[in-house]
Amino acid sequence: MFFFDPVWFLVMLPPFIFMIYAQMKVSSTFNKYSKMANSQGVTGAEAAERLLRANDLSNIKVEGVKSRLGDHYDPGKKVLRLSPAVANTPSVAALGIVAHEVGHAVQDKTGYAFLRFRTSLVPAASLGSTLGYIFVILGLLLVMFGTQFGMTVVWVGVFLFSLAVIFSLITLPVEFNASNRARQMLRSTGMVSTEEYNGASAVLSAAALTYVAATLQAVAQLFYFVMIALGMGRR
Image 1 (tube, helix red, strand yellow):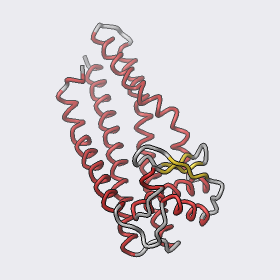
Image 2 (cartoon, helix red, strand yellow):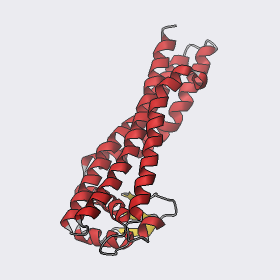
Image 3 (tube, one colour):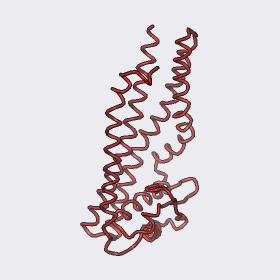
Image 4 (cartoon, rainbow, N blue to C red):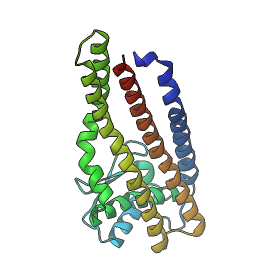
């Protein structure tokens, strides 16, 4: 099985290493700027309320979430959820993260096409990321036992997993655009000094690496699935 295939490790190791680097970069950058208090002394929750009002988004609720760095905007429920380290801390890091999530809310309000597309893909991508593996493994087992339709099952798995890859690819412009909006908001509202802006921007750039890493992992996995499918099909 491909779990013990050295080619799988060869394909997946580079994006795995990059993911580790991205996570370390996010953690170290967040820790650095979470210790730097912003000059206005506003917590993440207070900054969220300010930025939402500035963008005529007073209908968006701000709630808490327990997971560390689990901050996100829920377009379905129109809720911006903040982790304790962001919501309750008057730090530069909190401003960057909050502005990013408000950026998603602005995308939702303006009907940003990539966000709409990503939201519509959530059910299919969630299903595909799970069933894709199952169908590929099941199909390979069927092929090993000489079942004729085994390769069809493999290719169904490849198709299902490709939906998750498309979701990852669409996520990149959504996240980069939200970060660009965040930088513009922080500047236009005068909420940060030049030094604070640079710190918040560094947090946003570090966070972007995790999305790039996740996409690289998904693409590499799909590439491997296609490679073994083609290889099995030639037998």
